[in-house]
Image (cartoon, rainbow, N blue to C red; front, side, top):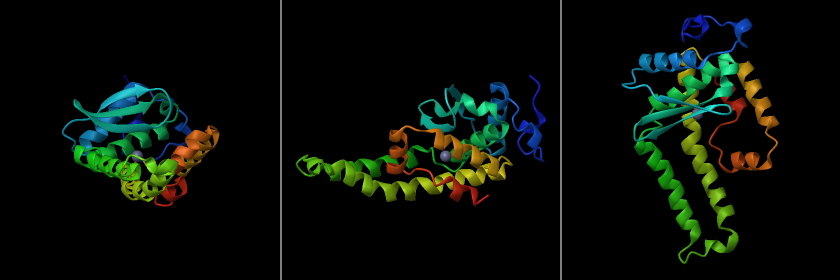
Length: 200
Ligand SMILES: [Zn+2]
């Protein structure tokens, strides 16, 4: 499998005219191994390809799983940034069981408080109240992690570029489902694209 030179992270120089080139799964997985090795990870995450866009990491009993949406392969910059950002989460310790457990412990505690001493769910106001209490907490715990992962990607020469931000914003706009928007309002795990772009 010949490797695209532009896909070798840190090979230097941008290739704007090649931005739309298609990346193969093998090339993307090579990049995962390259960045993981360079970051000194004892073990690269195991990649699982899924439908859709974006990527996410989570610890499993067999190690860390990196799920990648096949649609990122349509765009080289998207592939590079998504992979480097997700590995950034691993390198910065966001997928450590301790960190994950702590985040869940917060949410579970809030859930219990909102349920009330007699399981009254605060007469229907529970969910709304829970969301209002959770929002600032999620912001505080999750959003700095996203910025750290972005910084890591930039250090790997796989940055969140202005063109990518535009692309992601367009995708967000296409997401017409009201529930998706409501969910991202209720669970603001990610800073706005503007805030993330302004750091690059
Ligand atoms: Zn992230």
